[in-house]
Length: 314
Image (cartoon, rainbow, N blue to C red):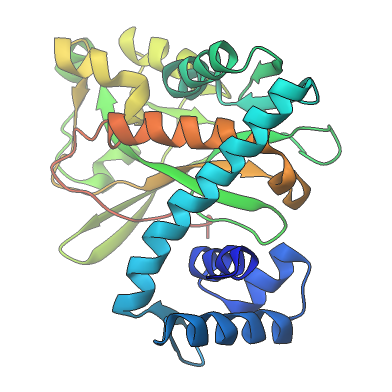
C-alpha cells in the first residue's frame, strides 16, 4: 500500500515543480523530500519524475499518479472537515479577502455553498482592492490577481484573467486616431493606481513588445470607478475583462487595438503555509477553484491572448 504522507509530499513537489520549494512548504529538509519520493518510486515500481538541474517534470506514470493524488488529498481534507463537523470541533471562522468585483463574481457563491454544506463553518469576508498583509492581519485566505507569485505564501492558481483596452463609443467618436499603441500618447487614458499608478502599458504583436507611456486626468484604485469613467466617455481604460464583459457584449464599451495583446494575469487563492492544515480553508479553495473552472477564463474578448506581465516603468 502506498504511504499517504509520501503521496502528499509528491503532490507538493509536482505543484511547486521543485524539491526545495516543496521542502520549504512542508517544513522538511530537501534530503527528506528526496528520500520520500525515492521510497514512493520504489513502492510504485516506476520513476515518477524527470529531474534536471533546472526543473522537475512528471513521467507518464507520475502524471497518472498525480491525478489520483489530487483526488485523494481533496477527499482526505473533506473527510477531516466532515468528521470535525460531526464531533463539534469544526466551529471556526475563516477570514477571507478578495478584490471587490472578482469576489462578487467568483468567490461569494462558492462560500455560501460551503456554508450551507457545513453548518458549523463561519466565514468573515472582506471585499477590498487593498493589498492585504495576510499574516499581520490574520487573514486565512486571500484571492489575488497577479502576474507573479512569491515563496512566502501558498499560491493556488484559479483562472486566467486577461485584460482588454476599451472605451465608450462616444469617446472614440470624438477622439483622434487610434491605430497603434503609440497613438495612446495623444489620448486621455484612465489610470489604475493599485498597487501603484500604471502609466506604462504593455502590448505585444508578432513577437515584439511595446511599452507606451500614457497619461490622463482620471486616476483611481477602484476597478468599478474606472469602468464607470470609461462608460461616461472620459477616456481609454486597460481593464480585467471580467469587469466589463457585459458592457462589451451590449456595446456600451468597445474593445480597441484588438490586434495587440495586452497583459494577462492569473487569479490565485493565496494562504499562509500554516493554513494548509485547515480543512476549512482548503475546502473553500477547492470550491472557489471549481467555480472558476466551470466559468473558464474570466472573459477574453481580445482576439490575441498573451502571458505578458506588466513591466516596471523605465
